[in-house]
Amino acid sequence: MISCAQSEVKQHVWRSYAKINLYLDVLKKRRDGFHNIETIFQSVSLFDELTFRAATTLTLSCNLAHLNCGPSNLVHRAALLLQEKTGCQKGASIYLEKNIPIGAGLAGGSGNAAATLQALNSLWDLKLCTTQLERFARNLGADVPYCLHGGTRAGVLRGEELYPLPPLPELWFLFIHPKQSVSAKEVYNHPMLAPTGEKPFAGKTAAFREAIRSLQQSQYEGVLFNRMERPVFSCYPQLMDMKLALIKAGCKAALMSGSGPTLLGLCESQEQGILISENLKNTAPDWSISIASTVPYGTKRIA
Image (cartoon, rainbow, N blue to C red):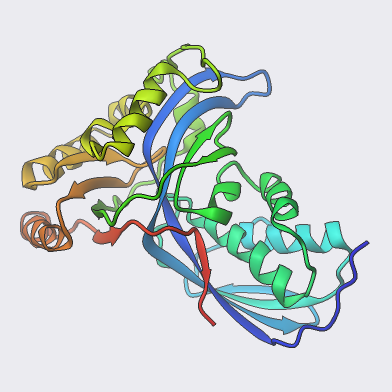
């Protein structure tokens, strides 16, 4: 059992960054009810901020009044998991400043959980290594192991088997954040999902190898793909309209991130992204729009 010594630092501040899927294919349904996928993860500069203070009990609060901060919240679950697995009896007062839209296909909650594992490992002086944190992350969700690392990575199986890829240069994306929510579970079980059924060779399908090759050759338009768009767009045709609007407005390519509903457009530069954003706000003032760039990490301690 790991001892939990008194930490010298009483407050830690961390950021957890949003995740996008530059490529996402669904291969087949597994016996456990989940699906095997192939994906290229990339972290971007949209972030949530978490403040951790030493305390005798475990509490979580948030800037969003409607967010459930109870035991089902991934931040709370990550903290409880650390206590359970290490025997640490210390607590923490955690404040979550949410900026990443909730349920948007950007892994905001998974990133929050990853930052919590790292922050409390330090605050509680647990001295857990990266391998141990990765094992705990797998217990919290398929995206949490990626969020511990961030950057550019290939993911297979449920997405938790990760392979580092060469880091991308600074790329800029324009995001549209629709108001409706999309259930990932419903998408995975939608009759129009149509998994490829293609069998991987040496861990990757031919299509996935080609996507990775295109990425490494900076042919980004040839990388962007999401098998989930077809079922989601059939239920929410307005999302397809938003994707087309991004392309029409000047984005080099556009894509739905993860299971949606967030849409993203690849821009040539930050300046182009700002210009497209201004034009879209003039034509669709009710759309929630943001601009972000690639970053090489999933979490970062800032204080």
